[in-house]
Length: 144
Image (cartoon, rainbow, N blue to C red; front, side):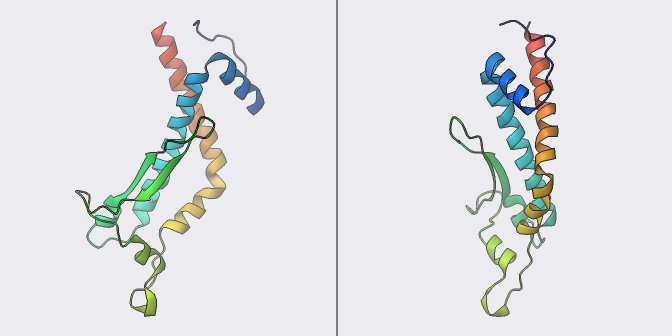
């Protein structure tokens, strides 16, 4: 495959067409890395806002790339409840929403963080996609 030279992309439709025609496998990898990077950014913010007692809850907040489908690329931020080496986050929902009877007041940290990212999601995706696209182009150029 020859290196792509002189490609001018005006908008999202042109970008989609370029990716589909010139490099479909690379496009999927770019989208995977972009989605995971955004999930990792959200994970880091959720960790920062998590209340600290022993630190187990913060260490239990993780991100991962999901399997997805051929047309849908996904990544998740989750709390590992296994109690393994990183500690256990089995009680995250009690911290987030509180416990019945007022014995444990709610200290929301997940929902407010996710809601603060919603308005910025499109811009974050565009910016990170550009970064990952440039990396892929550099990698292709180095192979040639």
